[in-house]
Length: 199
Image 1: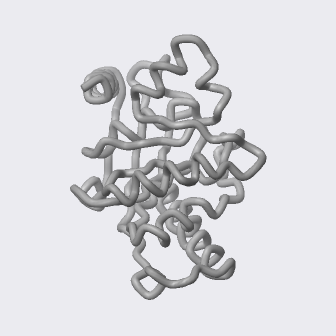
Image 2 (image 1 turned 30 degrees about the horizontal axis):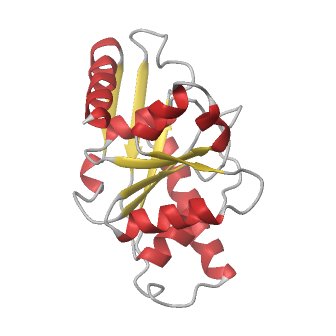
């Protein structure tokens, strides 16, 4: 209920005060598990991603945010869960895997932190790992214009370009190697790079 209210309010704001364009929305499965993967340049990227799809999206967020009074409670009620940065966090990994096993949508920013110049940074293999372990499709997304526009600039332009799902049936249910993760991660990077240019 709270998630839907906030999501709908933000979506309305974007449509009224900005030129908010979503391309390829039909590429997001209506149900079952899916891993939504996007580039990351702004603190508002999770909001933009959530407003771009007709699914309830669960996000990982750095642990420090949950310690901030009020903010921590809000983001937890918006289906975010904490992850410790800089070291393996088995609890967060377990949470992500369980969400996907239950047929949910998981939103990830594999760069781990925001890109200062807008260019893609190196990707962590987590998105590929979660998707392959849960047999979930990976939907690449390019968020364009979020750094300088939302929420302060009015009449700005934000484009979300959603690509076709990446699926790997030959790897589902199999032992996943480091090489497999690297190949899938490279596919994600290639897809998002192309989507960032195709505007």
